Amino acid sequence: MRILSTREKLILSGLFLSRFDEAGLKVLGFSGFSEAFNALALSLKASPASLKNYRDEFDPYFPNPRRGWHKRAIRTYCKKLMDEFGALSIEAFATLIKTEVSVAGDIEIIEEQADASESNSFVRRLVTGQAAENYFERVFQTVPQFYRHDLTNTTGLGCGFDYKMSREESPFLAVEVKGLTTSTGAIQLTSKEHKVAQFLEDRFFLFVVRNFAEKPFHTVFQNPLNSSLVFDRRESVAVQVSWSTCIGR
Image 1 (cartoon, rainbow, N blue to C red):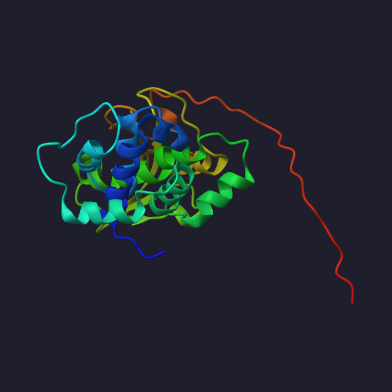
Image 2 (cartoon, rainbow, N blue to C red):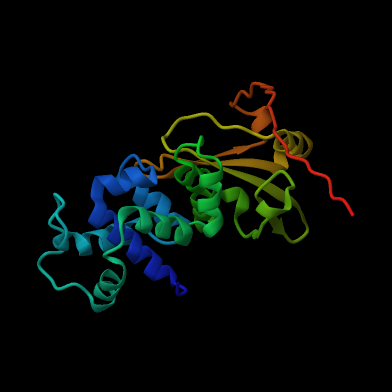
C-alpha cells in the first residue's frame, strides 16, 4: 500500500461515501452525512465542505439519490483514485478509510477486532478525540483566554490534559478537549483530569466541541469544577482478565 497524501485520503473518503451511500455510513458507524463530513474531514485537518464536494464529484457515477456534479467532467486526479480503489468491497474500503483517517492506523482495526463489544468505536474515537482536538487546534486563537499563546500537544504524556498553552512571563494554561456527537450529552473526567483541574483551578480549561452530527461548535469552561457544571462522582469495579505462564530453563 503506497503512502497517501491528505488530499488523497479526503478524496477516498468522498468516493466511499458516494459509492456506498447509506450502507457506507452504517458500516463506519455514522448517524448521517453531516456527522461523517465533520468527523472525517476534521480528523484529516481539512474542511467538511471539501469532503462533501468530493462526495458530490463522484455521485454521477454511482446509483445514489443525488445528482452531484453531473454538469462537468470528473477531475483527472479524482478519476485516477476511482480507477485505483473504486472496485474495493465495502468491507475492504471501510478498513482502508479507518486506517488512513485514524492516527492509530492499522492499530485502529486491531483495537476494534480485539474488543468487538465496543460498538462504533471508530466514530467514538474520532468525535471524542482526533476530530475534536483538530477542531481545537484550528480555532484556539479565537478564544480570548488563549489569544497569542503557544500550543503544545500533551495528549501522549498522560499529564491530565490535552494541551499546554504557553505565553511569555505567564503561568501555563491547561486545556482538556472533549467531543459530543450532539449538542448536549455527558462529559466525563478521569480521576487524573479531575485532580489536575482541582490543582490548577482557573488555569484549567474544559473545551467541549459539540454537535458533530450537524455543525460543530464549542463551549469553554474555565475552572470547570467551580462553574455551572455539576460533576457526580462515580465509582466502578471492572473485572480484568490476565493470562500467565512460566518460563523455564
